Length: 542
Ligand code: N01
Image 1: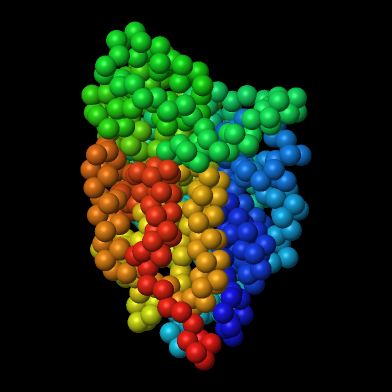
Image 2: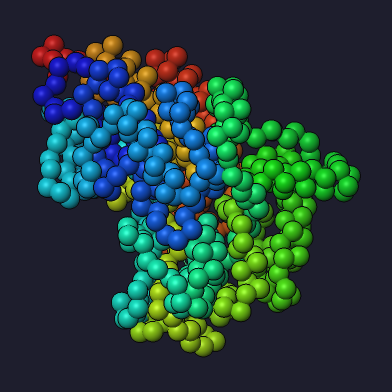
């Protein structure tokens, strides 16, 4: 690194997949690196997600790092691990990569201020620390800022109320309790499945039905995994070539061009594969054409309604007419979700027909009546993709705030950095593949590119790098243009920021897939980091 009085060459924020990869790689290249983490352990979302039933929606080994030092002697119990297994995996990563010695836990970054004179960032945290670094790499993930709707009367609830992402670290026993669950996204689905098994009463407050897919969970034996490990190196290569960073067979056939019989046979095959196969490796036109999409929705619906006894409940969970095209709002995986609604202790409440009026001291009042419960679960999601970044008071070269800079829409070059905010890079951030990409793949692909960028800057004696406004404009146009070919705007989801009142509606993830994204990052690097302004070290060393 060119000389600097900063405390660190690089400060990384957040110890999920992206952050720990940065720390490991940057340190191995000799960068003086520190990682700041709000939680008391590694894992990012897996550290915080301790709600009942929290489980991974992506299967292993696709959902892990590709480093053989990590996978050679690591074994999972299940194809879709529960969140405790993910935390144990991160402990294993820590042991192998010796990360903790360069991590400050329980340190939530509150502000980051650029100093143009010293060309460094000053990072302050809620624990009172104040540190400087030449570069900051923010790895706060897409779901680090929980969202709780501003329900009237919420503060008056006398029972126990938690957002899923802020669940007590020691757990909360729901046995024999009456539980109210607001929200039926991926988190809500998992809580419902667990609560239904042990709670006395479960009230599920649904505004939009989710299109949950069959997980097809399986136990994994050591022998299975030893066999699978022969293919790991190839599989990790294949995942870099797929749209979403998974290892699904890409289907090039059009759903509409197949006969109904062949189409249904294909759907059935994807369904039996389980996981996200039915979403991420469906026929080529399903996510692009509404008629093709409808065939997938109808197949999904046929699978769901056959499991639900009461036709009215079935219609609420899987309406004949979809509220939005299939898959443009993130599906989740389920094991017993739909069966739960056949139990006497589970009641589904349709908030579109009967909206919540207020939270009461002992439950919740809808336009149709009162529901009483002891535990209120807010499975209401996140200020996704941008929230983790805008929660930090980030001030750029003219003292401007990143949050205000994005008030009318996000602006980035390659989803990595913004004009006016030199030496600040974000991973898994807005306008990058982010929420459309398997986390570990993105951590390595996009993260590997950033490591190379920092190494190149060091080799060239560059002390300051900043995206240009023209490059931002071009990238935003590209994101918008590709998104117009998709159906994502047809649902109110966190993908387009529609779940947060007042948030600008725009597609927050880059919709071109990982290979196309990385191609453009590589082309930027080959062209002297086009779209960035690079400033070499001055003669006084600054
Ligand atoms: O959040 P969500 P999530 N009144 O935003 C409802 C990842 N994840 O935490 O759809 C009533 O999806 C809202 O209703 P509607 C995954 O990427 C992964 O479940 O807006 N309801 C919706 O039902 C996922 O996509 C895993 O009409 C309100 C729910 O709350 C992402 O995180 C596990 C409401 C929010 O669903 C977020 O999932 C968990 C209101 N005012 C999460 N406001 C795994 O890998 C919101 N809702 C396993």
